[in-house]
Image (tube, rainbow, N blue to C red; front, side, top):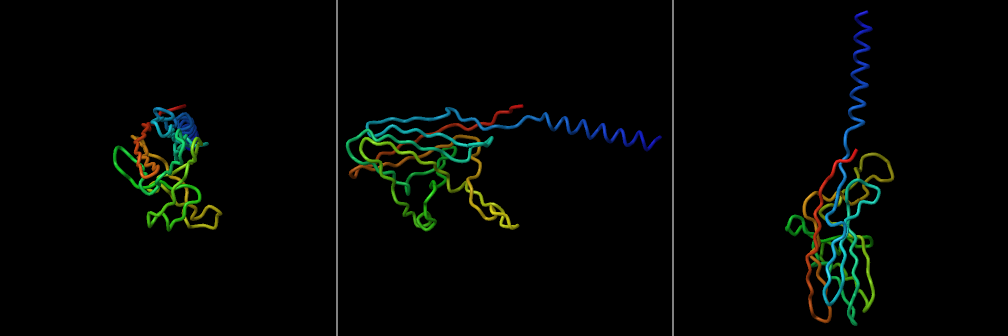
Length: 179
């Protein structure tokens, strides 16, 4: 009889523990504002944290609309990821070459006069590598890591005909509990 009571007690404790952890809140990243915008006589820019299908952000979307009659260039070598006011390095994106990152010879993106541009970008400092152990297809794959809570942003450097236009665009990332 003692063994039966002990087994039932363990099962009840296990069931309560399972129910308690099943009801634990999940943390979800929130951006304030959701999309930050900046506008000047050269361009209108939007900076938006992204976390498609995740409960955290892991990259950003930069949109620019060229308001001038001449091409604009994004200087990726001098454009920086800002975290809590500190420069944490360059952004990377699909198609970038590792040797260009190391030597800071990242080619500029050109936005033709009157045109728009969109690119998903990730801070180099936040890249994560899947563990190389194992034989899975993801082993060693580089992926965007989570963007931490705090103020995240971009120090955007744009060039046009020898002029340099600089803008700081930031959002505040927080976590919110959801059931």
